[in-house]
Length: 322
Figure 1: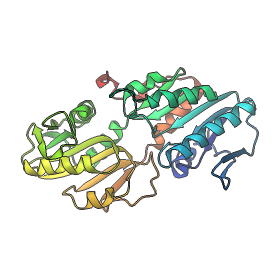
Figure 2 (figure 1 turned 135 degrees about the vertical axis):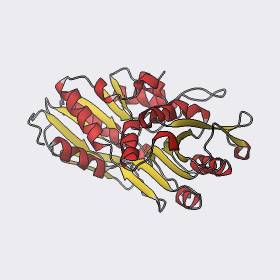
Figure 3 (figure 1 turned 180 degrees about the vertical axis):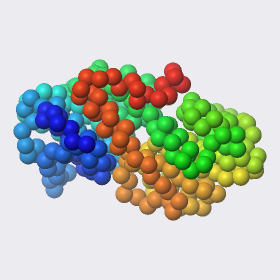
Figure 4 (figure 1 turned 180 degrees about the horizontal axis):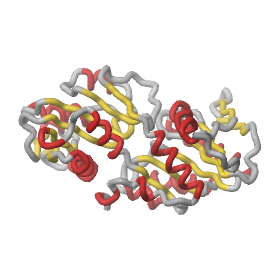
């Protein structure tokens, strides 16, 4: 595919060049020429090496580790595009960092997700496209159009192709806050549903984990949005093993794989770890990790937005959202 509209420009910053190249290949839009570097004192410098005047610019940048470097690089790129007279500046953030700070849970806490949204809008963006926000209400923090795409259909297709689903499979939410995501995957696969819950209000008290539902003799798929340390998955796996699950698979939209996650997952009874390529983590991955790409989903959304066509056909499980 080669997209013919010369007004569409696609740029990649430094967080996930490989994903941007996949999106470029699918759309047929070459990645624009941009140089980004840091000075000795840590200041970030961005140089756009081609004209963006009167063009619709799409910038691909996840805000994973180092979160603040990637966020500031994106903000500086937005400012450069606005000062170079771009027609529109649209940002594609496959993984939106700070989304977990979406409310004031304790006294005097910030709502940092809103702060970041304000910064991006103030910098001059016209639209944001993202993937599986940690909390869907973050979409409303932006005072510009914001599209939040979902990865559940991607996982469902993968598991169907690999013979998982139906009555012999149970989809598991590793905590009660993830029930909607798990239910969506269960509906796609025609499978049962279970929840790992905890005694008391503190989910960090993991030894009190118990299961709501039955997994005895079943293949199980534990689904979450973010894989950071791997503790949520490994603790859920321990509960499932205690309840005689036959096999344990896990999947997450964003694989951050913080130090120690690989070792923790390798030592668990988990058979396979499945994540998308929304994040290009430099840390060690578990031996049983597999990746599926979200590039086609993002590419389709970019073209639809640019052509003024609805993005709603890509929201395949919004019926389960609040």
